[in-house]
Length: 525
Image (cartoon, rainbow, N blue to C red):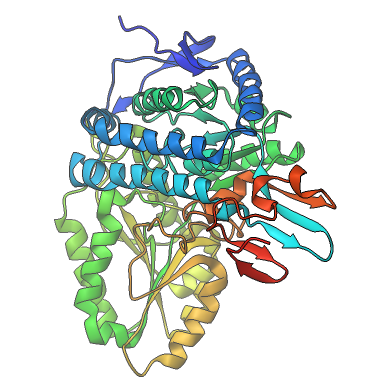
């Protein structure tokens, strides 16, 4: 009989104060994995919060170099532990070991930790601002303990104890209480072990990184609303996220949500004529990559009615049907996907290929392509935008560009939106489509599928509700992602020697960008 795994609280691995236990599932067999993990009581949460407060007080006085060194050492340890991390993540998620986990996601994870280290070291993210005439100086400062709840679909890059929210919160000077995703608790445990060792090696506070695996819904809501919490980062379902948001909002606590997105792709008549076959190839690759389990998966395709469109749709249906469905992350994902397909059918969508129940013995659902008209879509836009998280897509066929614009205007907020247009001759139509689509998305793409998010300073991985809880922030893109976990602080008539280092007359690094009297500069005063 397996023992229950420990939690990481206040710098040590110890037995949880557990109300029950749970197991992850091997999605390739739909069977539980042996290890048992605790469902922590409020006592665990309470101790973690108190320890995080102590860690925050210590981190407020740490040199930026210490935080940067921790992030870099952690990244090095992840790279060195690649083999066992990949094996465990594969067992818990079914995601391909190579290239997905070992060659793409893990290097991205260690890479973004190093970028976060560079941001912590430079201080640029804090946007130091100086008004010499008014005697005012301001910058972003650390906020307080941050709770991170990661998603099921990125066991490394968005993990609560290694992903983008974690890296941003630490780089901004805050301790993290990580709540593992129940789909990959063992992966989170291994990551936390590496983080704890890196923290010890670099002189970070004992409770800079803590890990619990699961709580009751009530304790989760209590956690994000606790007076000791500075902010929360959450990626997951809309239903659970909104409950957490309501609890945090009642307490006046910031919470940054990534919820649901169908990521529309719009194709013009000229693009279909010009390169329909190529666009079909790109769409199938993007929509079925990773069994469609990406937050930027292109779930809705908007086309104008034509013979070219019919050929395009037939090509998609053939390729969906001919491609073996991939493994989904868990039985819960398979169940939710099947239910979403049923909702789309009930709304009036026609199944072109796929549909039907999930497989037995493996977490998988047939690749599913559905079709409806713009008229039907506009009659029930909410149901037709049901997120089918996984390998299912909905085609919306419009009569013309005018109706395509109407469909776009009926869309909810999304992380991404893409327009494929002819190289020449469609500028007016493109302008109309882009004008309608831009307010609906956080990232507008041209002739490019949305799957994949570059870890670039210019990236926005955010968007209008319900893709996120706030349209002004990004979860990917350093240094901008750090601002979510900072508090803007103004210092009024404070003498130079009493100011934070970033706001003193001398530029502390010689290269930090500061906004001084209306000009961005690296100079000292």
